[in-house]
Length: 64
Image (cartoon, rainbow, N blue to C red; front, side, top):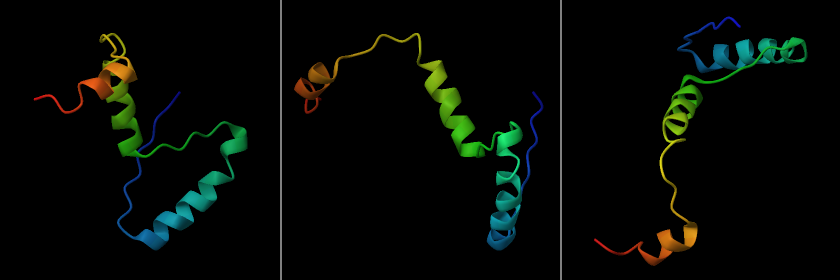
């Protein structure tokens, strides 16, 4: 897979470029924002961490 980064400062141009790129999704194009990729990297880094149940989280929510 090849990754391409495009920086566009003009919002109108951004919308036009995304509109064009949307037509290539059926051919396998994947569109991700830089922010989405950074979020996914952060989430992936936590995969091996111990998890806490939601109920435990709620019980300890206000403890400092």
